[in-house]
Length: 98
Image (cartoon, rainbow, N blue to C red):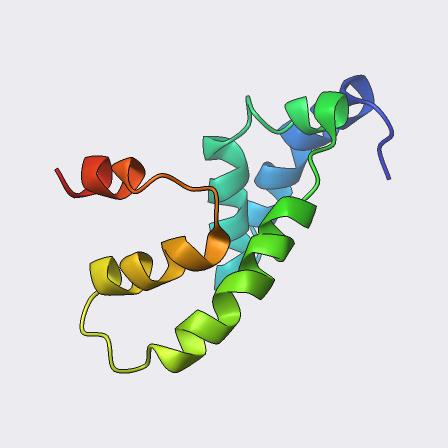
């Protein structure tokens, strides 16, 4: 419910402590994640990133992933996905593999 980073910061300090005492293991895992990423979370309020680009890329890669069930490794899958996304350089793939 916080509208600003200033409102969120006290909650980010209190919430992990409360969650750590939970009997639910998943809650303790979330508390650990909040503690590890504590410094970056308030930045969300300044930029409000959208995931529209990622959703668009996912919709383009989904048919390739569906057709690529026989690929034996991630590199082959990536090689099949890049042409479908268009405008991407294969240099990025070469850098990732080295």
